Length: 287
Image (cartoon, rainbow, N blue to C red; front, side, top):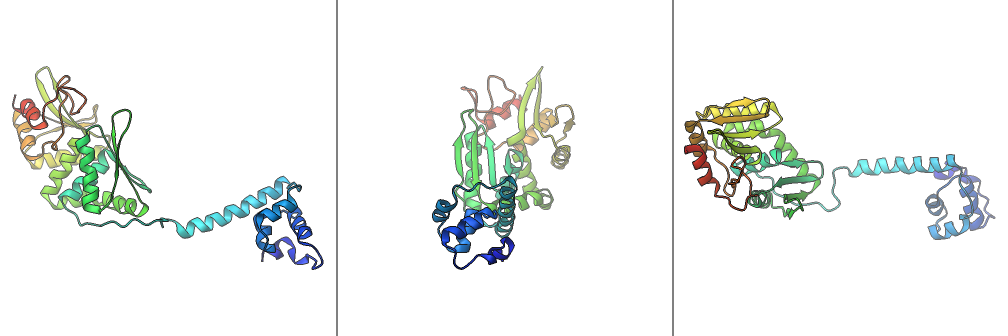
């Protein structure tokens, strides 16, 4: 087929290998094509044709042929990893809801894997443990120079499964109150902060997606917790002694979340002097 395309069928039998190489090269063939056609090594072909310059149009044709072949090769192996990763596919549970929620709020899932970012080590370690216990994976946990902990796990099949679960999450949590509580907890863990100013105590969770804020507000109302959506701050906010006490009882922050004692406005681990999240939140909520 290739010989007919380049007129190679006219190669005379009395030609030497060198002459055949040079003739094919002058017709615009690549070194690889010549080697495959004549059954020679590429180094031998290069030695015979190294002084022949291809025109711009010939180089373009070689590139176009290579590009067409690569499109076909990539299409055949798209989504098939070279080294497949075996992993579990658990059914929905409290822990799986917590994991997918964290990846949705302070994480990312793309075609190649999943990633989670947090300044608090306990939170990053928690997500790493969930990936290991639920899916049987071995994610990496590293700390960047800016102090942010990053959990990363790569795998095309894993990413595809997690993307599917991420799409199903908001529909699934409607089926169970405990799943809604875990979703709320992940939201406030990743996007929440405690704010105290002029004697007014607030717990907020910021999110650009207004739909998420409305869903969170609805789930809080089911628990008897009144809240409002601050459009300017892009956050759902709850205030008042009873609301904060109910939040502490039903939702709360995960273990390891700590309050910045110097600023008293966000849950971080930046401050040198910080108290545990339960004691700190009780102090903010109860007074």
